[in-house]
Length: 440
Ligand code: ADP
Ligand code: ZN
Image (cartoon, rainbow, N blue to C red; front, side):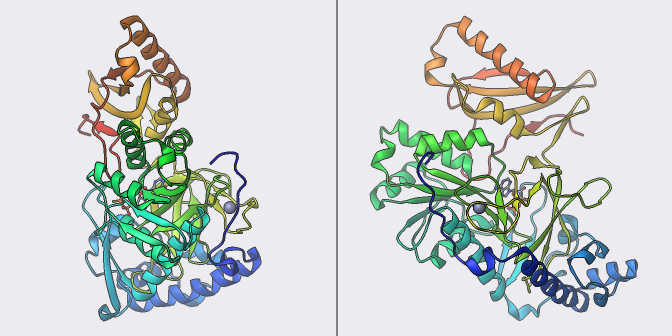
């Protein structure tokens, strides 16, 4: 919680605190090995490298990364299900898939080595959020092809904690189990954690009656305001965790208790930020699209995988002692960005205005319509119970206030609609924040 002194624990100090020079050498060595595996075993990489006139021997250090071709989600769809697998199929011990937020699902094959590397990344994340052997870790991410549940599970098991594999759904039962078993850590999406926190309050349970102290929350974009709200609701430290099935599930990057950006697991992946239009790499500090190259995966390694996630990198030292660069919060995905009358809008910008505002709950929905060839953005926001019973004049004042604040942050006028408490659907996994009726 805010104000309490931070004790930084490390799962693998040798890897997590390695000097930048040593890390670079390790990355270069692992990159050379990965490129060789890809070229020899995956037709798509061989064809793309040949087309560029690049041979595996040309890749000597991390600096040569830019010679390599990019990959993206459509490649996984085109090569579905096993076209990008680099290991003998008998070595694949696990199939995981994307949660299908955008388009048709994809699948990724993991070798035992890949599962072990992934489990360690999550173990590091849990440790960084203050967890360890003595913790009781309640996992409310969905289990299945989606990497959230099993990913958090493997990491929690690796640190030796007592794992409660609840999966998602049945909120009252989740809360009863958390309370009775005395869960000390919670892992789920931030939107579901918020819903759990609100339900705990409604059930008349005080945060002190629970033993929760921290949690790893990710799989969807969330704002700093949402963090403050969640920490207050549950009385915990809420750390961000990031990952994607193509690169190795949650744990690819995670926050330490300093909570100012997620350390990228740089001994396992090489991270770049590129300009999404020119595809040119951008320096640290500049915002652009995240691109990952895996350097420890053997089942389905990925070279320069374009995530469509937008953020920037920070290489300044962190008080926790980790030397790995930090990625700032994901502003959104390029797929989630709505363009309204030429202005780029991310749901997270609207969220930053709404969360923490008196009179409204942190639940919202953006509705995009096209009226007479003009795009209109509507924002539905839920009133709190107290505000709902307030006077019409007060509610109108609140609505105008929200409209003005959104205009000042995003730069466009929106239609704000205040809706009754609980009328916006709650999500047990990744929250849906946008309804686009434009059919474009
Ligand atoms: P998808 O959602 O594309 O079906 P995944 O389940 O593998 O596939 O989810 C990966 C995506 O989830 C990331 O590319 C990113 O957009 C989002 N994501 C994961 N963790 C975070 C996080 N901590 N903050 C913001 N976005 C996240
Ligand atoms: Zn740190």
